[in-house]
Image 1 (cartoon, rainbow, N blue to C red):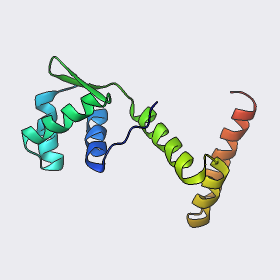
Image 2: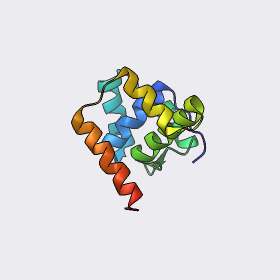
Image 3: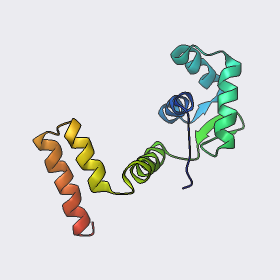
Image 4: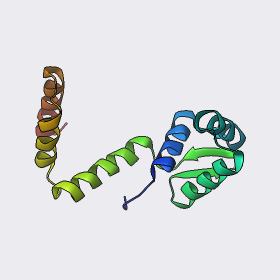
Length: 121
């Protein structure tokens, strides 16, 4: 996937759609009014921008995603590692755990992921 930049507001909006999809555009405007204190035109402006970026679609008044939450955040994580750590996952992990300690359970879960990868699962 190409580099997809979403601002904080657009990302929050996409999160709302992902949590409620499929959702009628009118209902989405109501959710955004409640959660973001937005007026209807603001909702439709941000929706239109995310449709142009290929993240969402508004077909016959029903809003759905074209890009899943998991795919978006996975791509975002890859982009951060590439740009900030020269693509080195070990460098990223080292930097992460130097500031935030992980629990024994988290370490075990990560080890299971590594073991599964080595076994080709």
